[in-house]
Image (cartoon, rainbow, N blue to C red; front, side, top):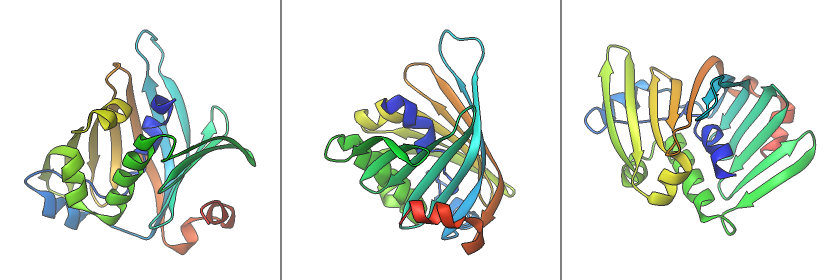
Length: 201
């Protein structure tokens, strides 16, 4: 079940990622709006299956509150992440709920997510080995989890971006690979609908 969430949990890296040497430079390049919404396009290549699984939808990141990851195609599905829980919704119904008491890795994953939102480098450097570079107005960075539980749930991450993260590649220990790209980014109070805001209250 955790593998199903791996791509979703780290797709919202409109946040801040870092590399060992140019940490300060990358952080300075990244915009840190309190609200960021946009479109995602995701391709997941499963081991033993030739054709990748394609999906797309919309995400919103609200600093201090959480993340909405709403898949529109091939079928509607919404993940809501808060600091201590992950909720999967189908329409208005809760299909699945995981909290940190049941799954300690939930707290670890969400801690990483909220650390990214807050630009907490010390937390990220505790949980990940970072390797990255900056070229002009662009950067790239690789994150390798130090904790076995986090590595099992997430695998390794490769991110590229500028003012915002443009793409995320997730390579899982199983050999599955997920690529996510972001577009049509909007920030500020008008970026999120009233319905989306209500889901994060």
